[in-house]
Amino acid sequence: MKFVPAQPYALVQRSAAVLVLLLVLSACSQDDDGSQADAAGQAPPPTVQTATVSLEDVDVREEYAGRIHGAREVQVRARVEGIVSRRTYNEGAYVEAGEQLFQIDPEPFGVALARSQAERQRAQASVRQAQRDWDRVSSLYEDDAISTRERDQAQSALELARAELAVADTAVQSAEIELSYTRVDAPVAGVTSLEVLPEGGLANRGDLLTTVTQLDPMHVRFSLPESDALAQGQARRAMAGEAVNGSREVALLLPNGERYDESGEVDFTEAGIDPATGTVRTRAVFPNPDRLLRPGMFVRVEIRTATLEGVAVVPEAAVASSGDGPTLFVIGDDNVASAVPVELGPVVPDGQVVASGLDEGDRVVVSGLAGLSDGMEVNPGGGNGDGEERQ
Image 1 (cartoon, rainbow, N blue to C red):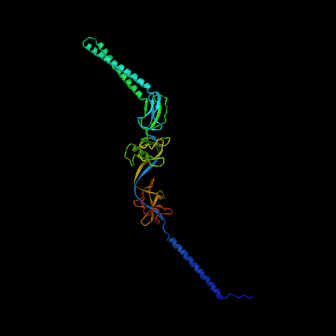
Image 2 (image 1 turned 180 degrees about the vertical axis):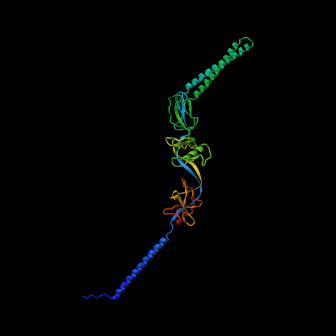
Image 3 (image 1 turned 90 degrees about the horizontal axis):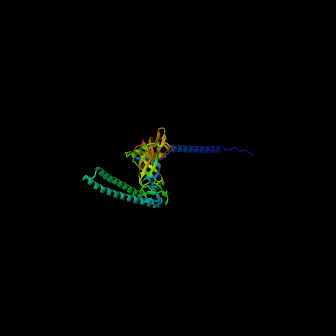
């Protein structure tokens, strides 16, 4: 076979076509790189969520665990010795002040009263007889018919009879009191406990019969931490009736989390610190007209310890940390974020208190802080909307 070489013209055509294709691919690659560079240079600013600062007065409140007790827990005791003949109340029931609870057998005390009354009648008769004798003797003495000694004896007999009558009167009063003590009444209105001595039992003088717990008002006992000097000072000044930054009023949170309708007052704060627990015992008084509060309930006491004037409240997540301490990002009219050092106050239910560093009307970034830096342009949009005021 004879080899035929390629024609020079065909080779030139193929070479030109390859060269054109390479030029086209190079141009496309350069256009793509230029487009990506342009896109990177024109990236939109990050979107953040802002809120408008409103300076206001903020109450600082603290909560403490407490236990409810009756304002008065009165022990009902026997005041005379005798057999308990009857119990007239239902255990655990509410009783009014003066309502009968027990009856101690009154018969022996009725007999004692009758005896003392008879003794008083005899003493009264002795006084009348001594008075008649004195009247006769004094008349005879004026006529010089008797001696001075006889007159003095008659006068002494009258005075002695009167003294015996006074003793008899006292004995009658004592017997009447003893008889009245056989009826055992409730000293205060409240809830009764279980009986201690059943019917038919012998009650000695001073024996405990039952307990009555007063339900209106109620006491809430709680403890303030040793470190909480602000709350302790507030409570002591409130107890003294001084005008303080806040008031002596306290609120109550029930076991189910609901707020009790009635407000209470701090009426006692112990001066010393309990060395065993490191706390200060405190007590508040709450009205309980509907008897909703019961002894032994676990509650939380809310005390307003201070009122901060002219401060801002922001979400806790809005606070960033820097070398200068806590900072907030404030958005200017040109939508540029500026890192502003601030002084923080306590955390309240609405958020973090900012004591200083913000002005009325400042726009603060509250969300979207990731990657945000001082001087960066931002897009103030998002969930809350630009310029929404935080109440």
